[in-house]
Image (cartoon, rainbow, N blue to C red; front, side):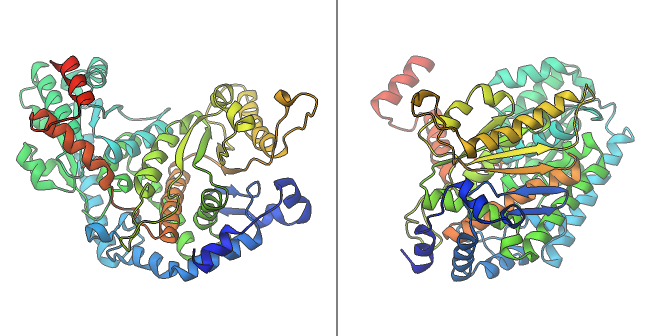
Length: 497
Ligand code: F6P
């Protein structure tokens, strides 16, 4: 253990309530406001000493230089020898990367204008086909922002299970549907099979030129053209934009089409504002850094193996699944950038749900279970519904009361089953109003927070080799070219003959 980690691993803060009692400035010290978002990390066990210890670690790890390397477009994705330039999509990056992103955005906008002008015939529905980072981002954006005034009906299909595609077909008329095929590599089995079946559906639905209704979003434009999409309807994005960081690029196309170009630009602006904050604010006032310090405190000092995010807003119900890919695919690693085992826990298991539903399902464990689960609440001040204001009032009161209850607990020596230990940490993000700008800032906050953890742990958040082995084995099984273990062989035989 290095001296810098030692300073962290020996931190031993008192109970949360004592932290508040001992420091009248605690709330202000651990609250940050940026881009219409209020971050309250005061109900975590972070202390001024802890923050100083993490600042020491950040210095020892050359964090400031790593952050500048990220924005400068240096090959921070060392295992794949490339940059990670998602921030350039929102205007923060090398001049060259920002200019290239702007040019590709202009191309995307021109195609949207052409569709709106009827160049591709009547379009009422968008069938978006993609998986992982090529689906989760657009899905989150459209579900969060397009509930009242989306300009098209959008179905997002990711699973190779034909039930998913059939459900989408049942909603739409082929001659009014635009099929959007999103795949960074344009080699993903699920996406290509679903796209092929969608072409078939168009054909059987009387569309004479099915390929003429297809738009491709990809970093491998040649492959999309080879597959059959006309070059004019291929919207490329840079290879240096990772799949789970790609909603800012042409992968955001269905969202830009459904929500309007202005909204898409607002999204980029919000993210850009968060990037600038991340780049410039001192560590103790820097929301992504403070949040990452909290994450590392719980995984490294308290042995937490998980963290939970609860969206107290129906519009953000897809946020936990979006974050699962972002956090676990990025930082679920065991090898360090130096090629050696990291030797400590990396990404905690991210899970979560929607409040208040989750209160009636999983909160029992949070309040009385034996696992330490740092909890994060995400709530919105301005209601998304037009019903009696009591709905939103109750929603928010529940959210805030849960954080208070987790911290305070309630002793009951006479009846342990009814005792609440308390001292359970939570953080709260309160969004003033949920719009494209604040959502962009929120997502960028999570991206940069992942980067901070990775930088301090010495891992690469931008590769994902862990997903390859299973894919390869499925392919080999399909080709009959692999001797599986007895259990797997038996399962294949039973189910597939
Ligand atoms: O299997 C993991 C993954 O490579 C993700 O990283 C990616 O977001 C997803 O598959 C989809 O990949 P593609 O966009 O290349 O189809």
